[in-house]
Length: 315
Image (cartoon, rainbow, N blue to C red; front, side):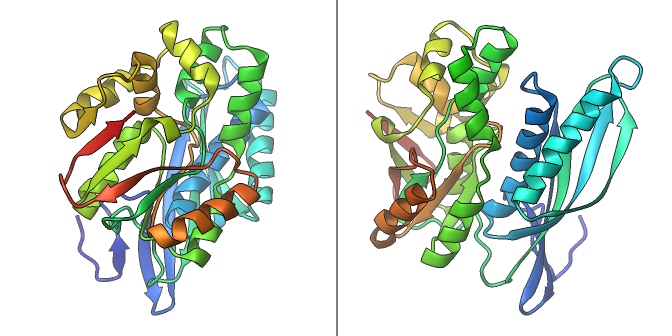
């Protein structure tokens, strides 16, 4: 690892993106993310992948400016029209985000993958990391959980049209508005919820901030169909890996259902932001976020001083 005094956020932390200082008033925010299709429709997949990649910049309070496509495509077994639709979906989402596509790179691969490399900007003194949470802060989750479970049901051809519509709306939604609001109102810490699941990313926040966390399970929003599909065993493999990795840090209320526990550890795609904000600002921020269309956003818990490095999940 190369030391550089201008590298403000890099490999030493578990933040969502890297930040490199260019001047006293300007820094670059950089990230990359790509994955295999999680829905059947190519255009929708392109939108989801783009929203997911852009989210890392939003989580740090940055403004994404440019992006490059990252493509792996099986040219021998798949029609190129599929790729065109994926790229069209990604481009439309970039346009919505006011992000300029400047290029990209593609390789032939036996498995289709798509995503973006994103560059944004931020003021060096206004960076929001996962390391600033303070005791007394309230925690706001901006999107409902359960996308991983419903995506598994989609792959199993079990998901209802209603579930598909709901999960698509969640995954294609940008985190831009919540990011802009938290910059205006002021917060202490933020991360976005992706592959490590809600609990996994919450653990990264308390580790980085040297605090503990209390969550109220009844306040945590999730897609109702996720509970139904979890009961059927339609749970992605990443859920159990997330559980195994974080079990020692979690104290779960014994009355919690196995399905709800699965949802808490469910790996998300293009999930919401988990924001740690001072108590006196929490209701104002939540109200503003809901007014922007994120009606299911909720205060889901609080930051505590003890026990450090532990998450207690209450009923």
